Each structure stands twice: as C-alpha cells, then as structure tokens.
Image (cartoon, rainbow, N blue to C red; front, side, top):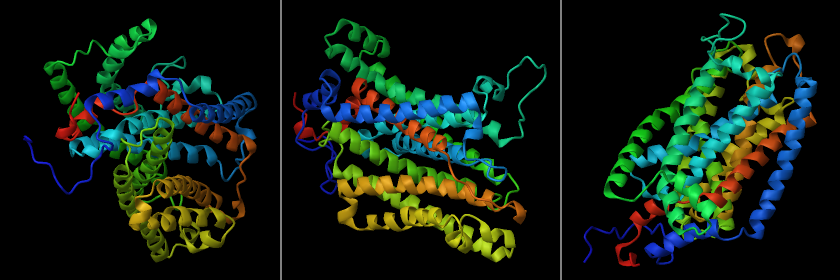
Length: 456
C-alpha cells in the first residue's frame, strides 16, 4: 500500500520503469565505459575551434587590440558583446538549481547538474574578454582593490566595471560551491563502484568522506537550502550590475532605467536556451533519453516563453519611450524604425526574427514537445540574444551625439576567431565534465521514482 498520494495527472519524469539499481548503473556507466564516437567527434570539433581562438588571443596580446575591428567611434564592440552574452548564458544555471530548489520543483533534478556546470563554464568564458581587452593581461590584478607598486592607486569604486568584478566573482564562487556540494553523494557512489585504484583515490578525496548516514543527508539538505538562499539574490543582482555598465552612462540608447530588469529577463531567456542545447548533447552522447524526457523539455520551453514575453515587453517599451521623448538622437537607438532600415538592418532583423518571431512557435504544443524543434529553437534564441547585445552596443555607439563621427563597424578575423575559440573551450569543458562527473544527480533522482518501481 502506498504511503503517500500519487498524482494521476502529472506525467512521469523517469521513463522505462527504472529501479534504484538501474538509475545508479545508468548514471555510472558513462563514467566507467569508454567514450563513444559521437563524444570524440564533438570533442575534436571543439578542440579545433579552441585552437583557432587561442591563436587569435596570442596574436592580439602580441600585436595589440588594434587588430580588432574597433575604431574611434565604436570602441567597445565585439568583445563586450561576447562578455555580456556569456554572462547571460551563465544565469540560468543558478536559477534552475537554487530558485527551483526553493520552490521544490522536482523536474529540475535531471537538468540542474548540466545547468550548474554551464554557469561555471560560461562565466569562465565571459571573464576572458575583459582581460584580453586590457591589452596587457598580465596587469589584470590591477582591477582588484589590493595594494600595488604604485602606492595608493586604487580602482574607481564608483565605476560599474568594478562592480562587475565583485558581482561576477561572487556569483562564480557561490555557484561553484553549490555545484560541487551537490556532487559529493555521487562522488561517493563512484568511489564505491570504481575499480581503478588511482581513480578510486581521487573520488575518495572528492567525496569528503561521505558515508550516506542520516546526519550526512541532514547536513546536505540544510546546506543546500542555505546556498540556494544565497544564490537566489545573485541571480538577479549579477546581470543587474552588468546592465549598469550601460544604464549609468550618458550614451543615448543606454541611459535607461529599464535595463536592469530587461537584462535579467534576457539572461534567463538565453540561459535556458543554452541549457536546452546542452541537454540535447548530453541526452544523445550519454544515452539518457529515459531521464531527460519530453516533459523536461516542455517545462523548459514554458519558461523560455515566459521570459521571452518579458523581453518582448522591454523591446516595446524601448521603442515607445524613444518615440514619445521626441529626442532626435533617440531615433537611432538599437530598437527603432531607423535601426530597421539603417546600415545595421541585418542585425536588427536577426534580433526580431530570432527573439520575437521564432519563439512564438513554442505556443504550439506539438512543437513545444518536440526534441528536434526545441533544440533548433534554442540555438536560434542563442543567436538572437547575441545579436541583441550586438545591437545594443554597436548600433548605439555607431550613431552618437556628433553626426560627423557616425561610422560603421566590421569585425576582423581576430574578433570572430576569439569568439569561436571561447565556444570551443566551453564545449571542451562540458564534454570533459560529462565524462568524469555524473551529469545527473542519481541520489536525488531516486527520490522521485514511483514507489512500485523501487526494487533492488
């Protein structure tokens, strides 16, 4: 007899009538077994992309950032676009892990581990761009408030760029602790099952002596809630502070109070789309079709629809406020009639098609519950969110307050190469991660298994 009520309405989140042992075996086998051809092909492509980007980084450091496509008007273009894009992608990981944990959403259990790893890997990519943009990356420590060889030379604490350093480093640190703590029970499972002595010793160190006792689980649950409570405000604070880089300036199109909530919604929008992309990779490469189900994809698509609607409202607000102000300079902001037919019309319409039109197909249930179309739409959204950042930065800078200095922007091969290199590094880290760490929390996944299947 069941000791609790089983809802007849909700669809199962685990398919295939799995037992407790089946779950453990399915999560452990990708780590124990040799990698398949699909994994090696994906890794090879990622390595080639990373090597291309690494060569462009060395060329930039050795020659100077003059090799980029910057000019005297558009002096903050491709690099800051990529920086904001990567920070936004890193947003959804903590949202899935922390906020959904606080709301006790069980569907997060199959996807939170990939989302947490995505956060860490994306923030690493984002951090590369400000360092490279300095031109002298060996002086990157100057942004930190520490004594230096020049005496009392301190960073400008009134600058949002310094706020970025504190916000993103805090976000990265807390997210890393939260991610690693959730892995501890699974490290112990691998420690007890693996036969290689060296690997067994490594996982024994990583598991921190986990024994699976009631006290261990009690402390695990308490610490999870505490860290979730710490991470939740960071979800909203990090991209809010990133938006201050623009909204606290006097540049037209940037000086806007709507930027903080707009950036947060856009970051969650793009972050969930990237989680969809990574889930598609993990699902196929590791054969996790029974754990990453169509229900998980549909729930993710619902959040994408919600945040996409908020982003659309922000677009409309930007357009109406610029039009109603009567300011002639506001006619050339990134979301305006002039932008739609000016020299960057292609970037404007890429934004509209990818972020506004294509996501509306998710209202159709057959599309929303399709793995293929969800994967395609997720990639399209990631492309659209990149163009959104590009439009905000380049369109507004290219048409400043002095018409005589209006100009265009053409990225160099170095700009493109560095960006592709960060994408390659991101997927290298993720592919290596899913080979040595459990990509799904088997310990937590067992808590949502139907009672009649909990047989050993």
